[in-house]
Image (tube, rainbow, N blue to C red):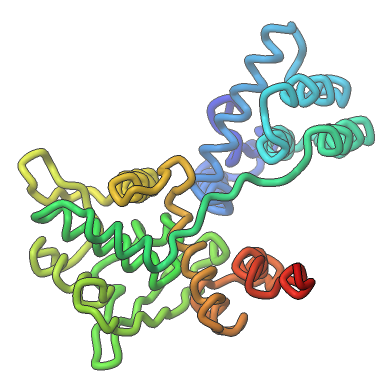
Length: 325
């Protein structure tokens, strides 16, 4: 099994003369299932880039020497952020582990090179701006008429009220939604921090304004689209007809950018994650507790959610305002 077209799922061929082939294929399936599909795609893309770099420089990629990997990431530092460089190192490590080889990424030379890169170009991630309540209202007002507007409003309001990741939004099914007098209960079957599929329930209360109530707007989308089962959010063809295929996370990002631009905001500062970040930031400004925010966002680490809290409190709890200037 060639490492350039399948990183995860490779099992040493030397075991094939002992283990029956059908059982070995089952092992491969479970190994592939140990990683999210998006993670696998990212690894494969990064591994192909490393293969091409090695081909250009006439260097053996597997097994790769620490000197090779250190030189590779040093060149990458000229055009990639540290997070992307770390992901490429992860791909190289996975490719070696997949065929039973020791990863060169753990060598001192590679670790020290990465440390120097971080000290030189920094590690700060570029964060997208959060959509606050007024922003969301303006985005809702900027939606189209007809089915596409009904769908986009439901995505924006549900994403904001539920603090959903874009992958979680597009992964929802009709059967995951239960409406009651209290609001909407969503059974989130799987998420970025729940790859084992333990699942959790998220409550979406009714809003005071019918036009921006996430529960009523979602009901309207389901009624107008006549979707009774399967994927909740789907694409529409050029005639405005609902298709079978679900939307992708990229589609959610495009919808957010489209509506922020129409609302008069700088669309380059916003993305699909802005809805989730906006929930945490707005809830903090309104006085919500860390625990209640984490219950909605699903954050396992309080340090992660505190990034939003710090941003929200930059001017609310600022000692500079107590100086009498």
